[in-house]
Length: 180
Image 1 (cartoon, one colour):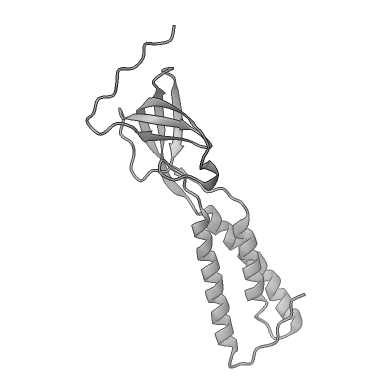
Image 2 (cartoon, one colour; image 1 turned 135 degrees about the vertical axis):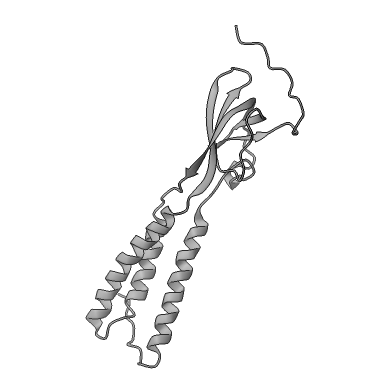
C-alpha cells in the first residue's frame, strides 16, 4: 500500500499544482499514441516484408473518419495517475484512500475518452483493379484525396494501401484485355 505524508499547509498548494500538471501531461501524451498508417507511413514490422502489388484506377472517393483502436492504455494510465493525484487530497488517512479511489475512477474514464478521441481523417477509395476489373474499397488516412481517374499501385502487404504511380498528366499504359 502506498502511504503519503500529510503535506503542511504551505506546501499543499504546490504539491496539488504539481500533481495536476503531471496529470495534464500524462493525458496529453496519450493523444500521441494513435498510429495513422497511410500511403507514406509504415510500421517497423512492415519493414522487409514483401507485398503483392497490382495496378488500379481510382473510381471514386469519399471522406471518412478513422477511429483509433481502443487498447485500454488510456484507461490504465489515467486510472493510475488519478489514483496518485486523488490520494494527495484529504486530511485523514481514510480520506486519502477515498480520494485515491475516486481519482482512479475519474482518471480511467478521462484516459479512455482521450484514447477514443484520437480520430484521423482520411478517404475511402473505390479502386478498379486493372488486371481483374473488380472493384475494391481501400480506406486510408490521407491529407488530400487521390483524384478520380488516377492510376494507383495497390499494395497488399501487412496493410492494404494505394499510392499514385503516374505523374499528373501522364497517360497510363492501356489496360490488359478482359479475362476469358
